[in-house]
Image 1 (cartoon, one colour):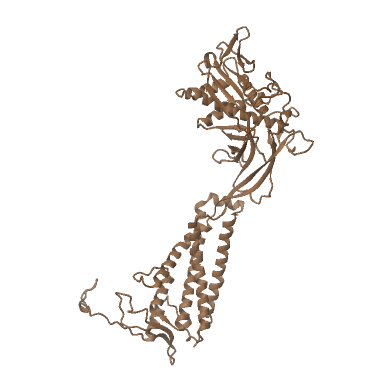
Image 2: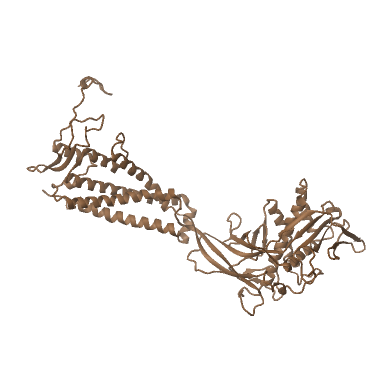
Length: 629
């Protein structure tokens, strides 16, 4: 008699070990590597995955289903292998064979709570239900981020030599655009906008302030952008017609991916003065010279000093008078004060109704965390050029000269914004005051925000003016001979792309145990079968190794060939006392080579006869019975 050339006791264990062990290594390696670090997709594929989420989900689900189906079928084959070895060896009970057959199908066993197989079947069934979902979750690409360190340089305004860069202290000034960066015609619109956007941010209105190549949420907070590429500059240079801001930061590690979106965060030095305003009618002497149409405001300052401002006006005499008094210190005026009182008063037909205010400002330089972002809903740009800055809790450093210069830039803004009929600063403040007229403290809030935004932008202007270069190839460097005072800054460059990274949640990691349980169980069953083969030194009957307990025809044929005798009980478990009714697969008729189940009834087995039927089966009517025989 010829038998198939492939021996299932060699083929299936080999296939199970080879494939399942490979699955175990690959899945575990992928899960561990993507848990420890980010596994990004190539840039071209990342864009495709990002733009086609449903297709990506479909492909991932199909791959996960294929892997799950493969591992489950091999697990089923491992059970068949172990059961076959047990049947051809010492045998097993019908109950165990039936339970293992149920386990191979991934279904539950009901009504047998005292049997250990009930709980094993439940565990395997849950694993089967979860493994496809678990693999889909593990293999689904998601948004990932790659980080690279950044280092750079910026002007150090807290250096004791910083005031020397600004030149001699000037108590009296006039508008001189050739030396004042804030009064340049290319910059003055931004000077006015800086205060307006700060007020908008304070009132929870849309507020994006733009200057040079960057936009700021609310205010600049006194920083100069940490640019990675040369940046054109609207602030003219006294040395050249073309002005640039050189790159002051670099990414210190090579990038292998461009990603879908880039952002970076830098820790920088900012200027965030405290501004506190109050409604107060500080005594101001106001004179109008009709011959030259000039309104002059004068206030007395502490220390027997005074401050005055002249504004050219039209027939309506509408203007904003803004003067500054230093909070008196013995060293002033040879050294600037650390705090200043700004006295603000509206005058004339347009601004006479504005309440007078006094605002005290200081000169605090703090450490800021600036995030450079590119919101796709706002800009179509690949360069992070939107800044959102927050203050890091740190000790503020007082820089009196910076406060002095920034305050003067604000005062010049009020003067520069004056026209014969109106004042630009007054128009902005009065428009917001009209919106909040019902709030008695609104004028203080408006002036606080406006002045703070203006002072912070003044710091940005000073930094810009100091670090300007004639060509984009010029770089910032720290040299002993360099008069520019620089400090090191650090940050992190982040690339957003598509790839794999695993959640740290316990539910996600516990679910991944489902396919691992199926794979490991398959390997353990093969090991168990191999050990049983070594322990039981018997030669299985020919073709018995091909017996498959999952196949109903195989079970029926083996039972018929063995001539099993028992009274079936289909209402209960099918076979009474099946836990003790054991069978073994062996030769039952050597002459014809018949192989079937041989009874090996366990101790305590008691046959159960059928109960007396309550009615004659011949009198029972079934659906569709026509009464014909």
